[in-house]
Length: 431
Length: 90
Image (cartoon, rainbow over all chains, first blue to last red; front, side, top):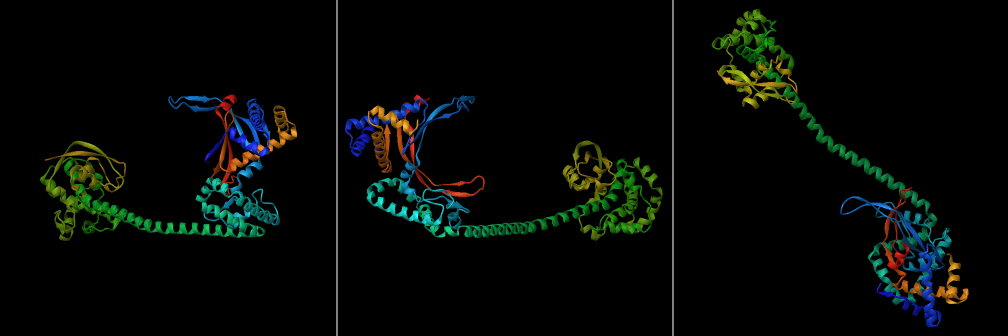
């Protein structure tokens, strides 16, 4: 695109070509374009054979937004002049690219049998419907292409800002041409290759999908399975810890209750004991991970023991009103408890060496210190998986203080606190 | 205005017979084609610009069948009306 032709230059060329006198030529060319201008301005469509059609097209109103203010405005409609060249003119201009055809694509890289098959369907001037004639026309065109090319070589080279750009698209241009050639050969077979190729592709695709899904499932299973096991373990652990607390709790709990006036008398009031159970109590203390049954059993013997302990400790500390309650609940038990628990250690709350080795410092709450609950510190809502010991740890810095919380909240079964339960946390002051 | 009318109008303006104008029209067109194919654009004041533009190849999809196809590059004739003409039409 190095040059622009203006009217006079065009006239000169025309003059040469037609042999008209210069003046006449000038007049002719000028009126040629003027006629077009006039008629189109009036709204009339102008059609020139071998050239094209000039006409006005209406552009309708459209809503838009004022870029500065952001408010909606209407862009009014207007008309524009359009020119559509005739097919013959189009072909002449597109000569350098005339052999190119549209290619059907399945995947980005393919451009073979399928493309050929479909390209046969694409209407082109060169491509007739019958393979034979197509072949001929192709050959004919190729030959024709050669001749004008030779005569126009210098022109062609210039034209080839078009073609230079073509070369930048070199690979693609080569392909269509190649396919053009093979198209000729294979057009007769068009249906068969198309079906084969596409079917194979579909199969491959589904196979890949299945493989992908299988792999994903495998990987996930490796991750999920152990995680779920861990979770189960954790649940177990929680439960067991709770049981620990339970077995311990029962004993300590009872002590706390007594001292602090609060009424958890229900714990201690289940004492339909047999004499055997104290020994079981000891086992319970000893930390079996064996779960709820034992835990519940522990409750009772624990109570007995606690009773014994209570005798010991509460004698040193306050004897509160709950004691009578306790007693009301289990007077018999008390009496039974005493002799029953003696073998365990005469109310001594200490553990065996084996047990002491374990972290059961929870047992020693009542021994070492005592606190008075003197008001509410705050209210705590239990989170999922939280236990009273954790709450105690949070508010008092030690797990040992959980009985106070239990007592203050009148929790009868410390095993079955639930998430969302609100506990009032008492302020503990030294006695 | 179809071709016949156009030729008639033009012949009247130039004072030539219809047959002659037809011939001269085809001459003019061939001159224009030559210039266009040799990579020159034609710019006529008051009328506009005629130039050849290259359209890059593109991938398009047949909306009903969903089939993708590669449309090859091509050269097209582009007409841009001049400002004068555009104003006339507005």
